[in-house]
Image (cartoon, rainbow, N blue to C red; front, side, top):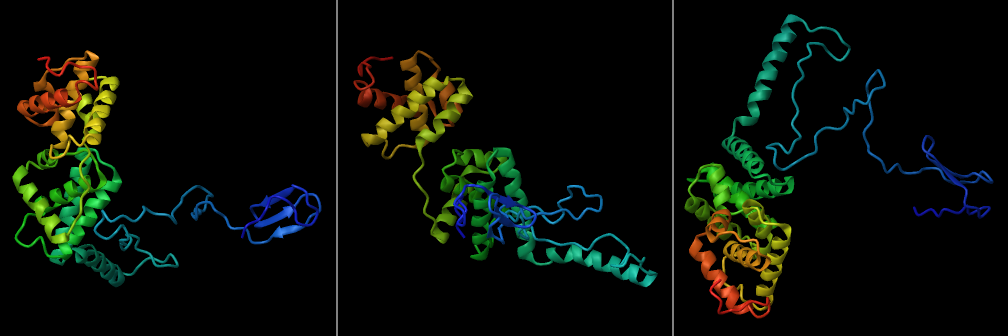
Length: 309
């Protein structure tokens, strides 16, 4: 219900909100405007006997990165019933047996075991690569769908998990390469690429085109180039996109060559070898892309396209 800040009875702006009774009253005439105000704050409350801030009603948020979505329950270790009386020896033995089976039962099925291992690996890889929770959740979603479609049969759990994480990077446009994903688990890059292509084909995934400008800052920080050079490199990448020069070129190689060209323009020289190693490409790629950028954008950038430097 929409309530204005003016009293409908006397017309004065003297409304007072009582958080204890939920009433909205006029301080001037005492008119009750609303009797059932909705508290927009957190739902939690404390059940602690000492009046502390023990927010036991709220737990960890649900997340698809947990095998049970974070909604698991366990049988407590207390050996007392609801009224506080201690269990007898027979009930104590029964409760111990129930706790044991409760802890073992979720891992009985092969699907649950597979998912448990894969989600742990995804969490570990995500932490090593320093990615956000949103990327981890997207990777977990892709892996769950692959498991439902039966794509794990005869394939490595870790390999499909790595491919799912790389697919999440591509989908969220996070600047991480296939080489980075393969390195954290010491996997073969070609094997991860093969599993990634399987996910794209079997799950009909549509990935956005990689943006070369997103890799510029990462490469610049590795080689120690300034923010000014990085911004200039981003401008160069945008120019190539506007003139459709970037079509068919690898985003990482284009970002590395644009950064090298920006360093030449701004006078912060780094060798092609240093930039190529930071970008994970070859020196030949940087050199060829750099020559192409000078030839196509030299006049726009105020450079001599025929200069050897």
